Length: 235
Length: 385
Image (cartoon, rainbow over all chains, first blue to last red; front, side, top):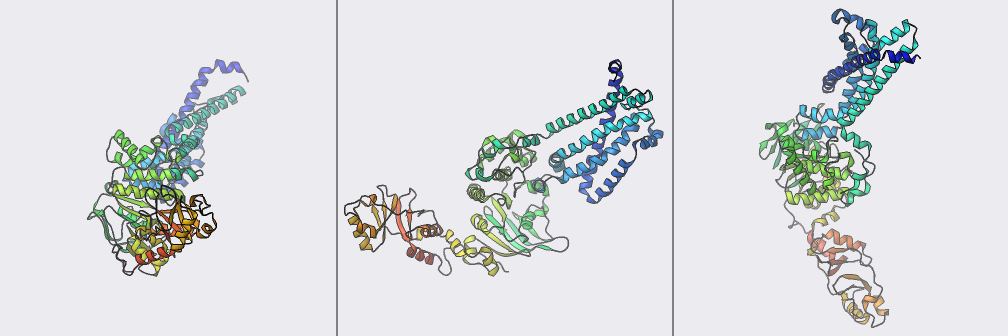
């Protein structure tokens, strides 16, 4: 480990890290933008889900490098060439999480929403998607972390990322550079995951309180009968 | 008013859930639909707010076919309460209650004020307003469900097994509160349950369904208990309908005996004379305010010192009393059965003894109440089976 190398190349490392972050996060967000409508369609028309899932899995099985090469004639050696395949890969995780999230909305809740006069679109936006959010966030975390690590492969076609440090380090037989690259990817993944956990907490406040349990609220104000036997339930 | 006019519902695959049902829920009354599972009661309920569409027949809400209304708008005018409340887990209690007002375009502040008002009405403390449903007990959640259904003050309330997911104690208190609420609000309520006891307790009218989605009988509860339309209804109501029917007969028709009641300061010798004159084995001893102290046995009076005040003797516990004005013969029977002397104590609203009764008196009162034709019962309508 040559520490002096890190200090003298701090600018390069920062630049590559930011590039890698962009290449990792964009596909997860684009994938989410595609998966939400696709997942909704799969829940609405159940027959759609098996073929969509098979297609997403098939795409996921393709080597990323092969996809980059296929796209070069169309998108050149640009970020887009890396972002498109990684977006497609993320669907394999995100579509099922949207579908599972929506299917996990309790039937009584859905029914109550309908019975109170919410039209389908409003019900979807104000009830079903918020309740599916925790599961969708779970998928998003996996998608973002895996995109961040896959983005480094883009370096093979010249799209800059922390992958540069692996290739350069290998060519120069200089392990420090490789370790720094690995460390950078891990750091990025951890930071990204942490910010998603934070975002989920902010967007789903009812879940936060759920983890604290309901001791104080359970008994306050309950008429006599209520206070007695409710301990095992928490919805 | 809600009227079913020859309503039939067949599901895909041809199973008939509801079979040519005619029934009416009168405005301001509670109609309970009751029957075993799969008898079509819930399907019938859900056809009212168009969660399910009938295959044939019409459902009229205040004379208008519900299928002529936009479903979402129709539903905003009909309160709906389901089992386990179906609250939105991601919304606070006040926002859950304010759902329909917000849909109707109320400002959030007004919807919250309305929510606070309703929480008080259903017996929830204001500190629960900003909590989430999972932080409440099952009984509290069910109260929120009722408040939410009432938020926009709809004239009609549909309740689908609203109390079946809570334990018996909570259920009884929720039932009592619904009765109290209904006496204030006079909504047209249609309630589904599989529990005949609940139906009899809550319903102004009870519609009993039989498997196959047919209506077996629709009548006021006391009429169902006194004249079930057929064997099915009788079996469904259960073996002790004779005793349960007594719930609908007030205790005021019962003859009370005032003679076997003696003051606590009467001497044992005088009390014994009273007992011998009445040929009563038991005398009820009361205090200066005529509140019951206990039973004195004639046999023990004979053995006691002549001057001993009866209030100082060892008395037999009097057990439950019954309120002459407000209790039913069922409560009197219960008090009599549980009393070790075979006699029960009737009290007035202030708890003062009005008189005592015995099996013989009770038998006469029951006999009077069940005379042929039952003239004191409301006329009902037996449905063809």
